[in-house]
Length: 200
Image (tube, rainbow, N blue to C red):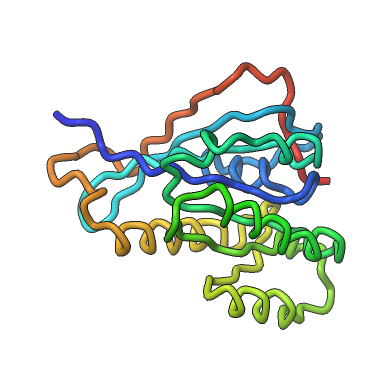
């Protein structure tokens, strides 16, 4: 039995916007009670079924601190198929930094990489007006998703949409001979990070 095709997905955004929590919610259906900033880079994997074929999503987590994302090498972006660009719906500063992240993506990622813009911490927002996020996403020609890593709202839908976009852009990524349990979740640690968590 052949291994399912692997899609590399990066999560980018400022520190404390909830990147790790989004990944944990999707991969493990968990939300950590206590969190510490992510240090360095690691990834988790989850297998899902697309068009009756298995695909392994390799979802990379990164530190959001400026000193880390400045030095993220082009090798980190190499062969990435998709990007989840996250900001905090309660932080105008993190939203303002989306433009800087997009510049870095354009400089280092492969042309044509699929991107979704994500506003996290939906559960903390009282007035749910997402015009700002929708307009910015529209200006880049990418989808926008307000999500909550805490409640899980829109998390699975967001990853599914991104995966569908990736496969539609390059159907050859699918392995026609792959087959396994779509609910299987495996976890991989990259670069032993003692404590990784985010969302405040």
